[in-house]
Length: 589
Image (cartoon, rainbow, N blue to C red; front, side, top):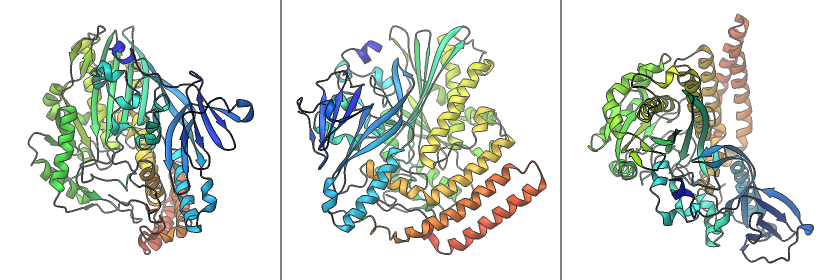
């Protein structure tokens, strides 16, 4: 299998330098000096034939680690480069790097000839680009396509495996696919690096004196990219928000096994508009296409993964209960997909992870039939994964991560028994060092996925790490909940616009309306005042809550600050949504 991946594989540039001249940027490969291209600083046009007229002695020289892509705005183009990286492990023997910092290079000298409105618009777009520069959870490899799981990688034809990585890649998971268009048009294949957003955890351990390796990689789909409150449900094509494929890869004694799970927002048409409420109302959108949306979503999953089983962890009461009822009703119309409801809060609540066993008892037979992918040291296929479990709650973060970690543990036990590493009565929980690393990788993966969607770390991590909820975990979850409230109301509008811009959901051209004319968003000037008042109150509330266990005075302080914050919220809520950070570009769909 490794020969199939590596033999004749297309070589990407790994070592690069950026040469900055008054009129051009030049990016040159140090691996193959003939590989180079230039970008005009006035209009962003790319040239692939640059000759030797540009010498290093005449320029500012800096080392870079990759070209993410380009984007054109009103006054020119901007090219995004990787300025620092960190090796975080390997995938099938190939080094994997995390993007630590990125930078946009401006090629917009035409801006000085623009109108005042165009300059204002461009300034806003540039603000969004600065937000893009700090995008978390981006990973890549120079030697292998990270968008494909082991089972799909193994099935690559030799012809396809020799093509550039971007041609092998699953377009769903290429975070920068929209930014690569000009580089592809200019045939700059050696510089085109597909980035994956999600999580990558790589741990080594000893199991009965045998070295082993577990890789946990999550791949976020870009087709409905967005933030927690501004991307809910599905679009008319059936693409779900926060859709993520998670692969748990085990390497032991020459064996390689892969187990896949997916998560994603409930694939109905629904929204949850921030309005300073702590928990904004859910709204299910009645649309004649609703069933077709659900059908398209599950048809796509079936085509890609085989038999699909849905595990729904939502509550039965309140707005969430209405969404649960609507989802269950639609799933009854799709007989080839098994729908399983599990009231996570009722069964697990703040108590014990082992109560997920009640869910596992319901699905174990079908779950074990779906299986996992397994190959031996000779590359012989011993087993294939024939289906997928799709897990969801409302955000597809906290409850979902706890449940998926449980299912991954059960699958891992089965794989290790098949490999002969565990007896039929043994399980990984009996090997403390190994089990701790396994749990930590799932906790850190949950944190990273949550950070990308909600802006905060995951909640309910204690259930994964300790198997139960702790007092410190409850306090942490409370503070995380407050942070989510603040970010969702006052920051996520900007983040959503940035995602829509770089993913191509909003295109900038001469006929595009000004972002200041969309969504009636002239009340932005109120945002810093409301943000400062509320954030100050929430911060002091959180701080004093941390001291509650020490004395009663701190408890009283926390109550007072919470009351003050609630009072301020009540006042500003009278002005409705004008205080909230709302997207200007694309809205909800």
